[in-house]
Amino acid sequence: MTDPERLLTEALHRRVEDTTYHPTPLHDVVATARGIRRRRRGRAVLAMAAAVVVVTVPTAVVLGTDDAPSPTRPTGPPPWVTERQTPSSGIDLSDLERGAPPRVDYVDGRTYVGYGGARTPLPARYGISAVTPYHGGFLVADTRYFEGSLGLTQYDGSGGTVGEWCSTGSPVVSGDQLQTAYVTAVCRKSGETGSFVIHRGIASGMGEGETSQNVGRPVSLVGILGDRIVYTGQFGEGAWMTDLVSQPAAIAGLASVAGVNEQTGLATGQRADSPDTGVVLDPETGDVRWSEPGTTLGGFAPDGEHVLGLVDQGDGPCCPAVFDADSGDPVPAVADALASLGVVQLPLVWEDDSHLLGVLTHGERRAIVRVGLDGRITRASAVLAADSNHDIVFAAHP
Amino acid sequence: MTRERPTTDFESWLSAREPALQRTALLLTGDPHSAQDLVQTTLAKLYLAWDRIDDHEHVDAYARRVLVNEHRSAWRRPWRRREVVTDAVPDRDLPAPGYDDAHDAVWAFVATLPPRQRAVIVLRYYEDLTEAETADVLGIAVGTVKSQASRAIASLRSHVDQHPEISDRKEER
Image 1 (cartoon, chains in turn yellow, green):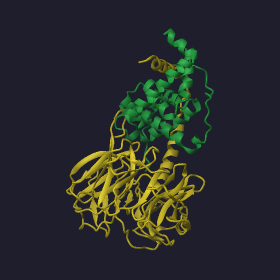
Image 2 (image 1 turned 90 degrees about the vertical axis):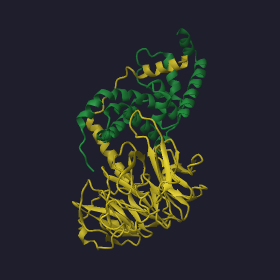
Image 3 (image 1 turned 180 degrees about the vertical axis):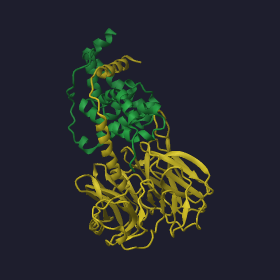
Image 4 (image 1 turned 120 degrees about the vertical axis):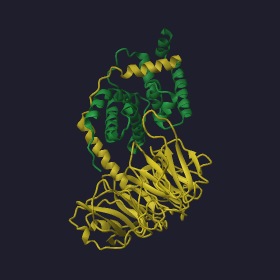
């Protein structure tokens, strides 16, 4: 150790070694924790960085299906674990007009529910936060959340475990539904060192052609644009694209990226120079289509014509809003429709180009509801008993 | 999902280890109030994760990781970046016994370092982590740790040469 190093060590130690501190009362810690938990729930509503469920077309879904494999629907914009919201009004979920069942696959507890209602038990030991049919089986992300990481298990078609890792973010699927990308990571526990590797494989293939790249930091994948995977750093390290061959390239102008659409080639995210401002831009050129202060943007509708987001009404991003992806003009019918039910916050995912899905909970009961861009709300499931250990997790589209 | 937290274990850990976290936080932030805020947020996050931590032998290092990352997140926030940057060293509370002009000058130098470089220095020269451990905590490459530390030491060496109170102190050694 050189003299400057020795002096530095000494100065740092002496600077603090005899300083007195005020112990933090436990109740203050608990109160702060509650606040953090509330904000995390708010962010879960956004599903901006934490894409959770993707479902693509499997070649064989044979994990003990109750029925024949469903024609599974493709994946979508950043999906997320649904949160229960209690309408402030006294609506009765049973009063909502019954519409068609969800036109996207979803996970109900530990059961995969395909388009058409086919139910496949998933051999997961933990709560499921994401599932991607993959290589004839499934990639299942679970709820072992630990400071940004979660568990990820690949099962084969008979339910056997192919591999188990820690992961970050959630798998994503390409617009043509042929490719799946996911992250395997060092488990974020103390003292461990390791890597954060993005893998890209053929979703319906048998393992050939998988490519990977260690990006060296915890990331959340957002989508696939052509041959590039788009991701965002979990600790605010910006928005990135990589072809898994060359070094990842930063997306200029973005503090984080939340959605991409292969049809338009556009991305959503938060402005680097103003993280409270949502922006739609061309990630290749940095050309900004529009931006909106006080807004957190999320995923595109499958056709790329609309963007889901949350607006800040004075206490942080809270309330769903839909914008025209090209102009940024708001589509007020969605918020108005929710307001008519007394619902301010409701996590939503895109079902198709003009409908969103969410799980609405009222008291001890819940139901999947569909919200149209025209403001029409229908019930897409039976009214079920609410179960805090039994999340419904939607699939969405590329 | 609401779950009950095993507060007893956490409370025991808190009372034993909070002072160490406070010290590191003070070195990272440079002022006691920011340090206390940083520690409280860190403790809250640890509290939320407590029953998911498989190996409680590693809680200290996990807490350090949360602390450092929270600090990095905090100084990236817009309100933080709007703060006026100044070369002046902020007021500090009473110096520790044995803290002389040379230490003061070195501390003043540390206070001028950019946040990430300062975190590297604190983890390497206060927490005594290896380069690999420092890289892991900060989520950066080992090479970045080496270069950041190396540049800081080179700057400090230059700083020493320009400040007689440190040079004299060095010669006394």
